[in-house]
Length: 212
Image (tube, rainbow, N blue to C red; front, side, top):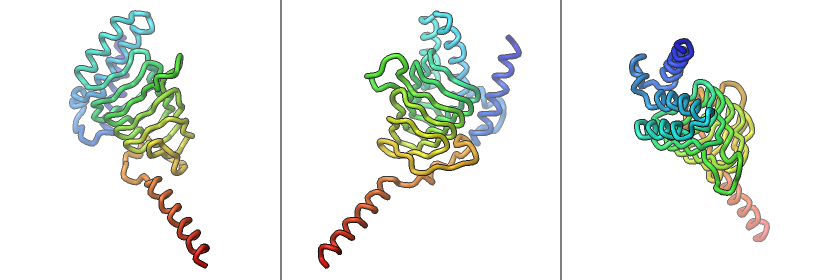
């Protein structure tokens, strides 16, 4: 038991110190809500898998009260998940999250209310989900995807792409570093402004042809 616990703590220390520049020492990791939310989920998920549903939910609710992060005991989470700030994050029961995923505050990985069975998203490894994003339904977010702050995702997003907007649209594809290592959220294009500009250009062209 000691070795897995030590490995988890060591892994979380490296992850949080790497992705949160405000953490100045290893001791501060124990004051980070992401550490306790993920640790509590490890326990609640183990209880859930053993059909101790009440105890699993009790652990979940205590963690929610202490951290502001709600992760359902049934959710499946990979290694090195980091939830930055974390307040208002909700992760549903059938959510699946890969390794090295970065989630900002206010994110919901939830259902639409119409699905049964697999009701929540599948988040592949290396994904970055910006603040306030809502990913709804059993959609699949491909490896290395970046989702801009405030977006609402209702459809699958292909690997190594960037999506923004309501509803979210893929605005460019890229290769190279994992999205979760690219923490700059200010460089996303305004997909709707681009579409409006294209419509204006088309209208101007039509008006010129009519006037001629």
